[in-house]
Image (tube, rainbow, N blue to C red; front, side):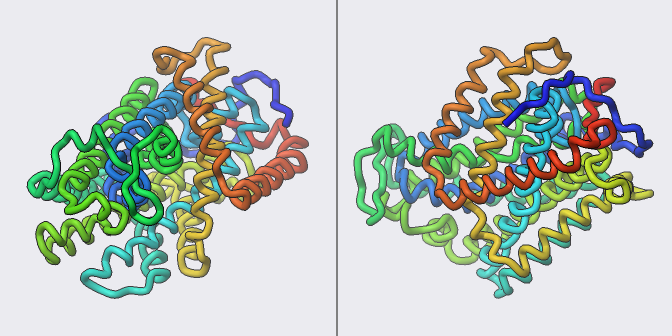
Length: 460
């Protein structure tokens, strides 16, 4: 695959577009980013999968996974502060590795923008089932639509709403941690001398091989910290606050996930229960069905909160493609329309949110979950390569310490994860790559002077 060699400073779009307004301070940026990571939903949805294989070694796996995420976060922070654009990853890669890989990055992330929110939204019905029975597909579609219309509100309103929801879901995680520690069946030392679980639920010695097998899931429990880069145009002083938001969000989310996980391991009646029971089951055993139902509602709120922030960031990415003149001109004009009152890209938000609602209602979207992990790995590797090359020229953004250690760790860890991916997921990702390159070759490249002109927003 040939990489474009044109200068990093690409010409800005010629059309006049109403830009986003910097209104988020560091606290607001962190709240929005943590809400997108949605640590409580990761705790209740992803961590049980880690517990099922890692057993009491789950905390070790999560800590190692967070360390890898910090390395990925360093790549986001350096590239994101150099190129503070709502285009997120595709803007970063375009200005470090060239237009071809930049466009490929957008196409891959676009698949995630459409697929991941409805997958998450479908889980709402599962956790509301303790109080009401609703159709999963209908509930997922309704959550998508409600989140989309909320995302059209101004950024301060969204920050306020997500802060309230984040507080509620954090209470749910705190309840789990309190109950687990106060019903301790074993000491903290069991976390340092762990046992793994096999497919039959039997206990086995915890080995390096078990840890490496679990990293494919554990390293994604705090995924979503890249939201800070998507919101860069609306963050005050993005050159320094994007990096701060990335790392603060990672730390806060890691605490919300790891502490309750440790509590469940310590408080479980038997270590074999870790592979058989979910978090609401443990809560019910410790505090009764009413508390378990309340915690489940907290999880549903966490899911809704995550989808809201995803719609906020996803709408910005689609808006950025219009501003960067990626499509035929009528489409560009539509995608860059801003709400007259809220100054938000409402058409772009409705496009990506409406597509997600339809997928949630009509398609078995959860079957694509494996593909999303492959795409995320590929995008992170591209960011790591960008972080390796970004210092060819001086830049005003944040500079990661111990460079190039972080990008090397990312490439090694995620390259290993890709080796264990299912063949069908790799093939689907390959098809997306082929389609992306075809559009770039047939439409964008012949119009390189007027299409896909990615604005680096250097003046910020």
